[in-house]
Length: 151
Image (cartoon, rainbow, N blue to C red; front, side, top):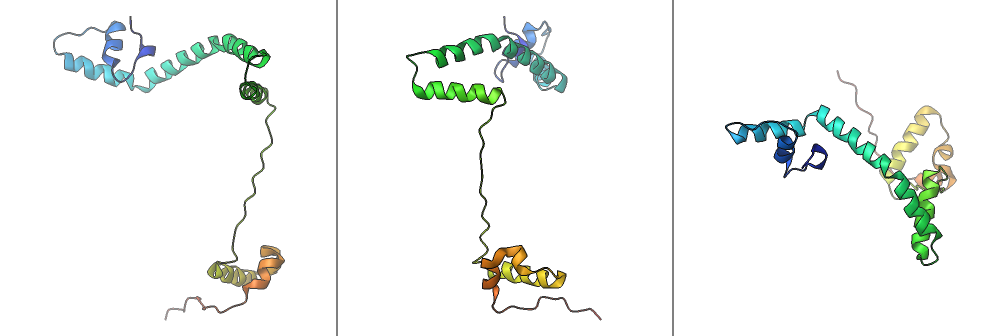
């Protein structure tokens, strides 16, 4: 017998009938009701709750599977390493990842000119914003973009 947990887009109607709802007369109306029920937030929340319960029952088997893989002399090193990483992650012993972000401004003369203008306007040394390397390369022509006062 098909349950609501086993539903998919193809068998929402079968799940609707299996749940005990009667199909009388026009089957199209019942199919529409099945569709609406399958998309009702309350039903979706109940399905989510049931799915979590099912997943929790699988935890002991999953732990045994990881123990078998990690402890097996026949396991591939890659499988053992993957299992070990997974255990570390779940235990809160995450690896450290560093990301270096470099903003390349050297070729963006318009942006450099705008930064220079803002630094001068606010009395901030340009080198403190860009570092010595870029602050020295900022010399060049510029166009005054200050708006004219309206009369």
